[in-house]
Length: 216
Image (tube, rainbow, N blue to C red; front, side):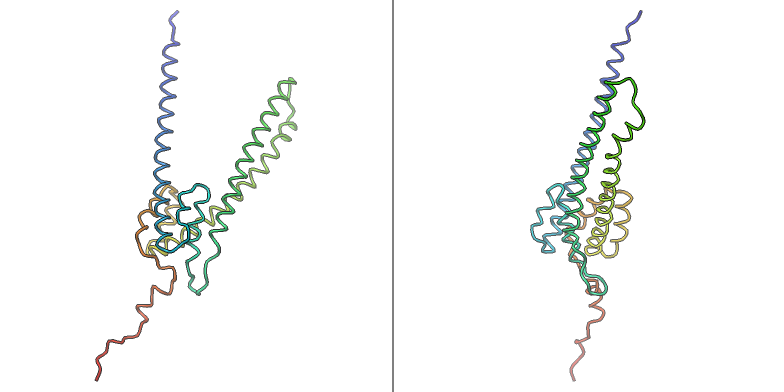
């Protein structure tokens, strides 16, 4: 009988190589987008006078610099924005910790079920439900915190986009919500623009008095 194992092994190796190739491409693209975003936020923070703008390069806490930029935005009624830096930082840290805890709890639940299955021939549905219930509650709590972070992040991002490019701020934000990878690209493109954080400053040139009239 003909041995097909060599072809199966060859196909398996090709599939694994292709999978790692795809992962490598996504990794390189993701790293490039991360660097573009970090450079953009760093330069914006430096231009706007944000303290320690280099934090933009540090994973997890880099959202603090973006939040500090958003805090400089002045609303139409003259009031300042919320403490986006602290809020984003807390939500990011909490969501990261919850995600790690969720992985540990879920892995523990699976190991517990596997050991229980090894000791007995059958597993009751109540046993499965009891083992996975803590993971389910933790998952939804993590999801809620992550959603709160995302909403706050997009609000802060809209304020930053508006400050650096008032005409396209809303468009950029909508596009980022749909295509998340565009966030770093837009921040990088806008990095050299001069921000206008106070909405009222955009119209001072129209309201300024005319002092150029000829003297009699």
